[in-house]
Image 1 (cartoon, helix red, strand yellow):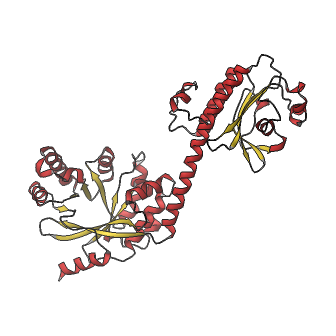
Image 2: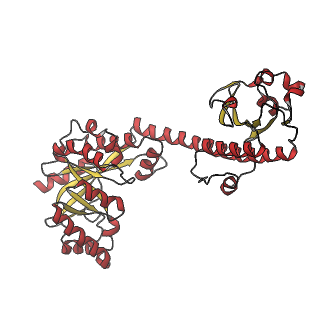
Length: 414
């Protein structure tokens, strides 16, 4: 099978489409409609061969009389599709009523079938997936090899679309299996990075961060992206929150921060995950996966938790539009300055100006600013001079196990 470029697919479709993102079923239907209309046929369909049956995968018809329900089908041996694919019927039939081999099939008489064109869909491994067909109930003596060649071209495009969809389905299945292995196994663990008061160098909290013990190693962001892509992102986020709190709590005045996307908040799964938690000892960091379109519902879902003492932080401030939207709508207790602003702040006037503006905003709204990604003494000194009172980063403490985090807290209390 020759690979068909997306531009070539789009060229044959009447409606503008994004071939890279369009659903395979929609693309196939548009292909069928285009070729059916061009050839003046009553119906067109893509079939697939599955467990001895011919299944209608995509259909386009000019009228109800020729409508074929998607997902329906019948025995493969009793279909035109199979007999065209194995050569017992020709690919171009001008009048099935005059062809003895076609009259052997009950559908020829009962439907009835008049004109019929069919091209087997071959995949790149040489296997036959199904067929790309057009037909009418009446004969059409004007059909010729040029029409059949057009159908072959559309069948080639359809096979390319189908193969892409099969590959995406295979990759999705592999991704789901990997993520399910994380959800049911002991792959996920949590580490804790100190959040420090820059004035007295005392630890005020720890951000819990997910780590995955897999071979080959994969970064946490890759795991969460993959989980979201297969619809398991909520489950993985909730598991990370539960794992972060499984060890218990640190001393009074030292909180544990857990990350949660707006999507997992809106899912309604957080109250169950936090039902036994001491919410006054937890800060929920709202992370940015996508633009929030329903802030009213997001606030509604968070309100009962905040009424029980849960504090809120907005992560990655300065990194994108959505983080500022979170700040304006959610009225957080903490704003976390993104590391892309913190790094090099000692050498960049623009970063200092943005930080100063956020400090003023935080003061006006009664929340605190936490600088992430503090890595050099010069960055730390600049942040202090600007009036940033809390910080997090490798200079202040690296992520470590819960036991080490507890030892650090015990040490500062002694």
